[in-house]
Length: 282
Image 1: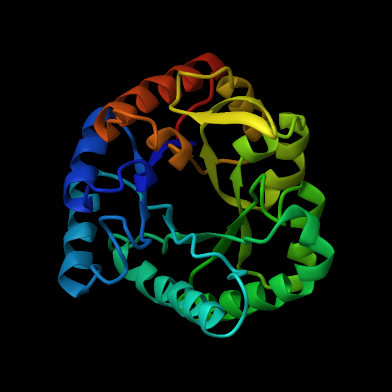
Image 2: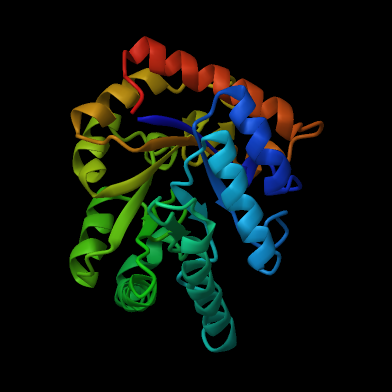
């Protein structure tokens, strides 16, 4: 497994600055966030910028396992909003391969479902249809799609994730396993890993405290999540990819949030967890 960091926690920092900084801390992988209001928006990622990113990744020895394109598969309402979000997701799939260094596999397209947990029965067929549409568009570029379950979305439980995988039936549909969304629901971490790690192309980790609905996502090191036990469970389930820190919007909204310091603390926390778990780096 590799130690990674997601630029979700560095919304104002462009890749030209985040990549050398994260490599200098000791991270071995980076997940770029390509959403509006982030430094590396899809609109910014023209040919010259993509070439600079490829060069920087190669020069600093960083893998690009995924890009974060959390536009959401279930846009509020229908019509124009849904079409625009699907178009953005398909653009991200087209751009993704051109960000990877020469010889590297394209990054996984990491996205979310949206919707409310109580709406699952009403929206699941529409979610499967749109997920399939995105998977087919991404397959044309050799890109895998990794849908990320969320505590407050319709895709909030392992059984629902497994239903979606079966219903869509596309070979390039995978899971982005962010264990925090299951942990704050009080689910057994090892059981979640056993169910979903075999389907997971990428993994997120945060720190957190409490149980839904009374919980908080935190900067790594501030909470009580046992990251070492999670790493052991991942390895036991056969996962060997990147483990990428995400600093949530909840943590970023606190007064005085410093993206550089959050990255430093995240590396120290994740490095210590790897050491306690005795998990090797691939």
